[in-house]
Length: 261
Image (tube, rainbow, N blue to C red; front, side, top):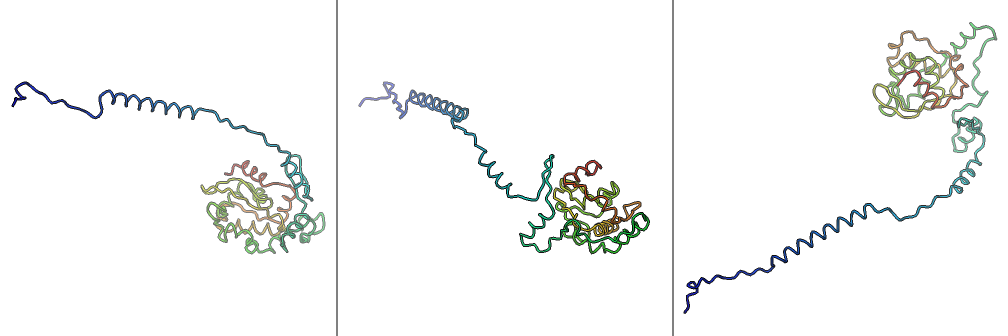
């Protein structure tokens, strides 16, 4: 028996995959990845081939004109503002089932019982008497729903009157009257808290009621301690600010002119 080790015999190693095949697989995978990246790049930079067609606004304008044609009893001013006739407003509210909307048409306001013309002293005395005849705390109920009976408001929703009303009075005696008469819309800042709601107009209330409400607010909730020299409002003070046709935004602009946040 021949001795294999005597002749230097070495076993031969065999692999399932050759070195050439491994190199070919690596090259093919690299080429495939490059091709995939190029395809993604082309898809990402390709412009859409869709067609856009401008819409014809004639149908929309026709529908808008037809809807506006049914509106009656309003007047449009050159600056874009509109005014709705009070009688038409009351009719629209009544159509929706509201029996007593609490709105008075012109000439229906309660008589103030003014004295004879030319007697200024008597007129001032009568006006002050009308305001005193209204219980300000009771009339304030229309404000308490939002500003709360304590005047603290609701943070983020309705601003407080405690302290803030005194600041408004000190800034302008007329401005706070404009707020209750014509309302306010726009973002304000009170004690560091932003508010961006709408203060409704209370122009439907009588001069005596509004004067009594303001006097109650400005002498309550701690406001009386922040006003140096408070002069109570009389119905004549409210009447002097009526008829200006101010909008919510006009009152907001007035606030900004006074430097109030």
